[in-house]
Amino acid sequence: MVQLYQRGTKALGSLWRDERGIGTLEIVLIAAVLIMVAIFFKDWILEFLGELMDSVEGKADDIFE
Image (tube, rainbow, N blue to C red; front, side, top):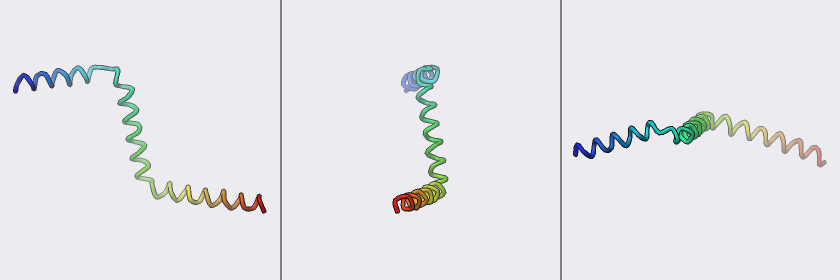
């Protein structure tokens, strides 16, 4: 059991020191933050997009009449 723990600790330490995955980690963290912001402001975003589409539809109707 102790050997398994030591191997796991060593593997985790080498994974932590390995800098090849840093770019991937940064992308995942940025995506997570963007998803949280989108969820937090979901109602405001949907309302804004609805008003924007209504405005575009109204202006398109004016142009084609």
